[in-house]
Amino acid sequence: MTEVRYDWTQEEISKIYHSPLLDLIYRAATIHRENKDYAEVQISSLISIKTGGCPEDCAYCPQAARYSTGVDVHALMPKEEVIAAAKRAKEGGASRLCMGAAWREVRDNRDFDKVLDMVTAVNELDMEVCCTLGMLTENQAQRLADAGLYAYNHNLDTSKDDYKRIITTRTYDERLTTLEHVRKAKISVCSGGIIGLGETTADRISMLKTLSNLPKHPESVPINALVPVKGTPLAEQPRVSVWDMVRMIATTRIIMPKTVVRLSAGRTEMSTVEQALCFMAGANSIFAGEKLLTTPNPTFDEDMFMFELLGLKPRQAFKNGRPNEPKELREMSINEVF
Image (cartoon, rainbow, N blue to C red; front, side, top):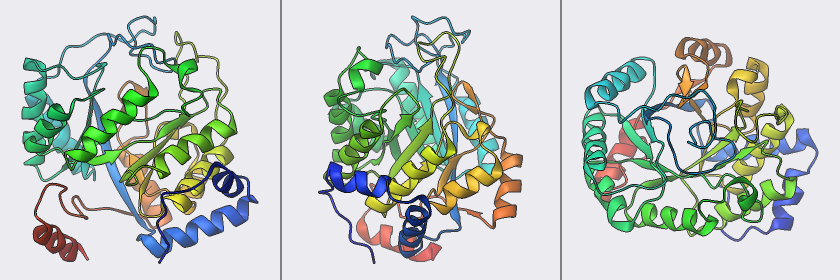
């Protein structure tokens, strides 16, 4: 079994990333098969429970209030609509529902209380529940855990050195602090980045170094390709090459062998063949459904056709147990799915 390391250097990761492409894919595929069921892919559905009006200045985001992108501002979605969306996603094959709110940080108010109710309600559908709500305090993370939250997404986006070029309204260290609060609350950590922001290859490698050197690797690492949106500062960025996506996914798989590597934003621009290369390189999770918050995404039907073609199968919910359940129950649930 592959050794799990937390001391990868920039030079080591760079050597992996720049290795001959076929060798890189073969190595990643081998490690994937040693550590995972290579044919099993987790399907998640992502919905925007509060859209637009965000005070942040993330240069890629159509929900930032300061950019004119045509995204309408919507208040917090009613719980009944969230439950209905969760049921549709589950019927489509999703085992996880991710709820995103365009907030800079969570505030202790009625809206947060409503989100906690949503988490509990979706959890009762026997789906893994993930949230991405911005920065969290330690107490807020614990309240989410108590409500039954399975995972929390908080992407690093890019390297620490490149970060200020993309976002000025918060710091890189604030992002890392939120991840610490999530981990302390025993919530599964979901954190990755976006390529195609105008970053260098060294920035991509540095971001992976930060993630792989955390005290524990994130349980999920999304690799997003930028979807340029008119009205944002990055609207004219060229499409990311599939080879860049494959290199990022393969490198992530090699240095974080136990992690779920998520092929995330940008799939609408990728052919089935290109996505197959990403799965071969170690991706074992996707977002399904027509939208990722506000940007287009393949439909459930399209993805199910691709799964059948490639011989892939959806991963069950809670395969590794629930983060906050007692160890003996967690081991029982793991044994049940195998």
